[in-house]
Length: 414
Image (tube, rainbow, N blue to C red; front, top):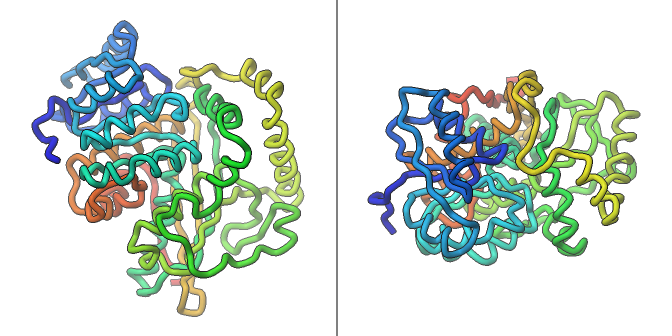
């Protein structure tokens, strides 16, 4: 389905929200000036104010057009027909996201979002993957901090071991080494709303490691030591003492979906497993964090606790100021273990200096450019569908490097 004659190449839905504004800033300052784009939402006055701010960031660039659209099927279907690709930052996606997914899948409009809502993503895959693929539509959810760092870091390690040693990967262990940033109101509302909108059984099923993968592994997972199961910590050479990572489950499901999308798991390796952790200062603090997180998640199940927390945090659309975020820093480190070659290992890093929500906007915008103007990649080879950031491959990595995201991989002891 050709979309080249549409009015826009890209429409950003949700440009008046916290993350949406930052995405619009990155598009204005960093993407090609010949990009035909628009900002979209429900409130013309707020959108016009955003456009005025964008003009001051880059006076020499033609400002985006404004499109008014309610978050319903009729308006979003009309909007999808006007553009080659829709980027949406309007969440929680479990409440507002499906009409946009449906409109894009039906109209052959490529799609990128920044959700971390795995149960919702699973529902969208089940409902719209086949339609999107039939229409040649590339759709990438979880294309922000959830879950690009994990997905791309795993991919570069798999590539490193393939290129250097011509072997598959048995395991990737990811560590959130440093995360100096604070959550926005939208992120916190999403976390609280998951428990309001889905049963514990549904959440648990969606967060199983291979819940989003199109194929399932033939071999069982390697068992974790009982100490790790009980205390929530493990020690990994070159990564140190690791403990629970709150983002582990969403990241793991996306990485394992990438595993399944690349040649049915054969490219990454038939025994491939991914796990995500967080660096601990020492074993004692790691154990404390494990139990604190476990207790905190248990309390979130209780409706009165969620009601109280909603009153205390940033409200949707709000987040840390630019001044408060100027020293933000994010760093992941990871180890990839070869499936052969006596367990040879590769190491990788993913780094970003700056506001974590600006990074999410950047990640979506650069993925959009690969889809719109890029060459051959796994997403195109598959004919589209609901895929993952890693299916954009090397060109996506190169664009992120050009946007000052640090990504590297090398053999250890090479």
